[in-house]
Amino acid sequence: MVQYVTLPLDLSFAALSDATRRGIIDQLGRGDASITSLADKFQMTLTGMKKHVQVLERAGLVVTQKVGRVRTCKLGKRGLKAEAEWIEAHRKLFEARFEALDEIISEMKREGSDESAS
View 1 (tube, rainbow, N blue to C red):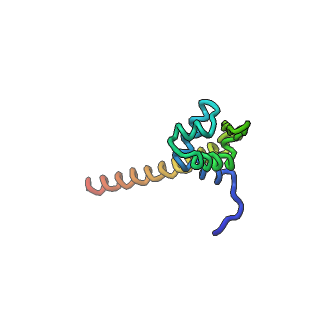
View 2: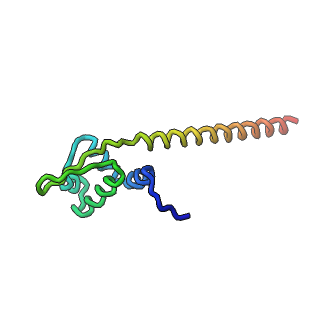
View 3: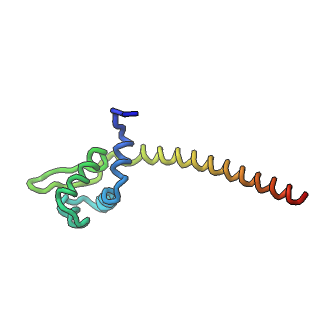
């Protein structure tokens, strides 16, 4: 099914699916940085770094400001609250299913040991 509306969660998870972009988030957590310094840190071209930053900007995870010839990046104010809530809800769902599976396996083991004792 084709979806035409891109939700903020989709943008965030797509942005965070790349190790370089997660590294950029980590780096900006330590302090603001120019695209040039980020490109140097990650040993990539300015064009490549700009593309990564644009993905993070579209997701609202990073904001940039250009002063003269320097574009500075910093973490966006949006944060990851909605993403963390989504992950937590699904973590609980998985835990419940694994607990149910553990119970089924335990029951099968008990039944198997009862049959071998007979």
